[in-house]
Image 1: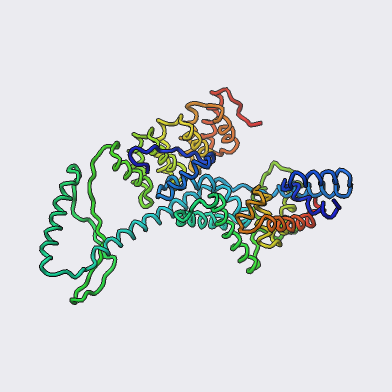
Image 2 (image 1 turned 30 degrees about the horizontal axis):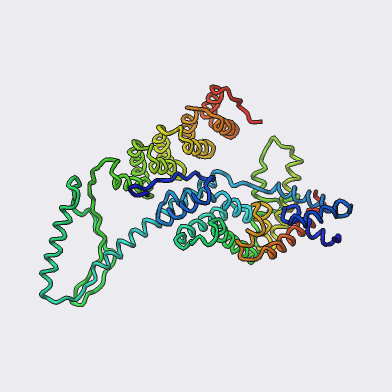
Length: 207
Length: 299
């Protein structure tokens, strides 16, 4: 809380500049719960989208969200502004997601896909597709397409999948992806190339 | 540039990850080579197809995540406070061997400390008897007895106005007390008097967005009424109208937004019409749009 004589700053989620963000982080480091929550509001949608797209399970995305921001909460005092807060945050969430994907690979489970007479369909996409106004034939085609995309994504290595997700769906630059994953831009580029090649091969006849 | 090298770079080209010179060379080659052009178009179609998969997290999931996070972080904060208290107690119970003749001096010092401390304390604050004692730890001591570390909860009445910084800070903390929604609601009702103050307004907006209890959120929205024209408040109200799972809270949100329908709010109201399943709220939203001579649908 601001002390006597200090000027309180209003933080508007989604529109904070770097300078505001630094002030916000310092306030949260000093124990200001409101500042912490404003910081969360600025980034949490992206974090949830990344976890949801990667893990294709609302429950898993919920768990990753909690774990990510609880780690931020407990370790924020260690944040020294050596990198951007976004990079620091995404290091946490990507590591958690990679661990989850690796464990899933070991257990050989892929909850996103389900077998049907039309091939594999994406569970989350099927829920999203329940729109009675859409052409059923088109619905089925896009469901099949989603199912195939999910199958290829499930076959990618966790690193390839992460890079592909961050570049294609999150719109992050390869340099930032490399920095977040603790690797070089070149390595991230190679991962992306392999992932898109696999997609190209699997979806070539669909488009 | 040969075809193999170009095909390697096509995906990076579509992602805009090539340098200016690399792009130039690639575009020149693709312009002259039909095979690479076909490959580029095919890859572009694959990129487009991948977009059918993208999903935004549902607003309900996002809200559930935020509310759970608030409960968890506040619980951590509370347990840390307790830990500090226990450590302090432990520190105070450490027995330091001291020469016998100094003991009366220590006792006198404690008495003086208590007297001065009592005088310094604001006289308007009444101190009651301890209301709860809880044993947190115990150890056998060297003289055959036992040292108990107890947590003592005292209740005090602090009297002061909302202008008193200490009172206000305590209220802002109480507004987030995870254990008692009734206390949070009553606190917001009191804080309402100072909704114009930035830190109070921030606390009210946070309660409206993050509190898991709809009764508390209703209190928060009611307290925000005097500042409903503040731009930040309006942004939060718009989000609440679209995302809150409680119809009562959404009704209040549309009421406050309808007070002054501006261009930025029209889009939200139109979106609310498309999403809202509650007929009463839909009707209120429609009325607000009609009064502002705005279209009911988005184009």
